[in-house]
Structure formats: C-alpha cells, structure tokens
Length: 362
Image (cartoon, rainbow, N blue to C red):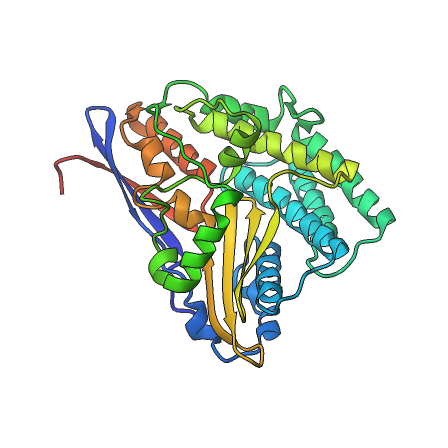
C-alpha cells in the first residue's frame, strides 16, 4: 500500500524584540481513509490500522472497533469494554513516557533498561482483544511500578529529587520562555456527539481543520488535569506541562494497580448515528481521538474518517499558537530550546520541524 501523505508539522516562530510576534503552522497531510478502504470488509482493517497508525495503535483499534459496533447496532459487553480501557490506559502510559524521553533525554543504562521494562510490561496489558489473566496483570503492573520508581516517578505523583526527570523539569523552569495568560478552552466528552456528527457529514473538510463554534479547544494531558483541578495557570510553560504529564503517568499506574472501575475521563465512548453509521471517542495519550464509519448492507466500508488530537492542538489558531504568541523569549539557543520544550509538551503524533525568523524579514 502506498501512502502519499506528509507526516510532519512545520512550525515557524516569528520574533520581534524578544517577543514571539506570530506563529505559523503548516499541518501534516493525513491519510484519506475512505479512499483507501471504501468497499473493503470493515473487520479486514484491524490488521492494517497498526501499520497505518504506529503511535497509539491500540487506541485506534479500539476506536474503530467501537465505531463499527455502533454502526451495526451492537453493544460491547462490560468485560470487553474494561479490557479495551485497560489496553488504552497501558498504551497511554507508554506514549506519555515516550514523549518525555524520546529525542529529549540521554539515558544511562539503568534508565534505558527501566524504559524498556516499562514498554514490555504495558504491551502485556495493551491488547485490544485478548483478555489478560489476573496473575499476569499483577506481574505486569508490578514491573511498571518498579520501572517508574527507577525513572524517578514515585507513588503519590512525587518526582524523586536527583532523578533524570527531575533534572530535566528543573532545566525547563525559569524565564527562558514567559507565555502570555492565554484563554484556555478544553475539549470534553460532552463535545463528542457534535464532533462525530460533523466528522461523518463533512469528512476531511472538518477533520483537517476542526472547530467548535469557532473555538479550537485544547485536548490531552492539560485538558484532563483541568477536570480534576479547575483552576489552572493560564500562562503554563513547559515545566508545568511536563509535571502534569508525569503526574498522569503516576495516576494511571495507581489505577492499574488498584483495579478501580472508573477512571473518570471517558476513556472509551461510542455513538450510533443512524442505520449503518457509528462513531467512537477514545481518550489516548495526546487527547481525544475520534473515528466515524458508515457501512453498507454487507458491512463493507462506505465512509471512514478520523480526527486525532494533533489536529486540535496544532491547529493554525489552536492551543500551541495561543500559548506561544506574545511570549517573552530569552535570546539565543536558550530561548529556542524553551520553545522546543513547549512544543514537545503538546506532543504531536508526528514529527515536527521548528524554525525561527525575525519579523519583517523574508
């Protein structure tokens, strides 16, 4: 299968007298799922999705399965839903850690080994379809807890002093980047039905540049934190966002360990939109992921659309732009590194390029 789409975001930061005057984002191009898969049996796509979406592949599989079931008028059992939630949560932990380490920190042998152990353990829990025996689940969770402890993420969401993560967060503190007090709006499960209805009706015209009543809300770690801590700093910089990510990793580990029934952030939701039409929302690492499908009478794909968190957070008028525009920036490499850290804290699901230019210059 040849997939001719550009899997990178280009970000240009325009500077004027130590202030970020403007931010321009050239979005990625996205795979045209309806064109790729129209006429194919719906369930034949399950083996393709992990190759098409290498990040958050479990979340994509769960979203697709849930959307197809809704289109068929079926409802997953509680056992199946819980298994899917556990798989999404385990994958979310892996992706949150990936965003902390990959391309940012040089790990010593001990830390690198802990990351590998963490990934292996979450893979045990991460299947979208296979049940995990209780003894194996407990062993995997114990391995995750030990790995997080080695990395400096302790129980109670405490970041161990002297750990590689604590040192990195400390480097992001300070005044290298001083964001403005930007207006904050957040995507929630209450928005799901409007989004999936528009997604199925308008397809790529909506998913390439989504909006809600003219607003571009933020989704992801910071939005989930707002549900638990209604008063968030409107000028949060890289360090605050990294701390929120670390706290969520610890919280998810505690949930896996306790076996509670309710994670309280709408991990998986599905919606029947009419005969042969269904959609689903999955709360993955980077935010709320949507799939919407329409099936013909033989359960073949008639329409298949998706909307990923990156399209909200890296929208041309979205949360990243609002957080950067008007910021005071330290001169030279120190300021540029702070901008890169903030972009990384929003964690796009594809690569990005970042360039700096002086306003008024071509």
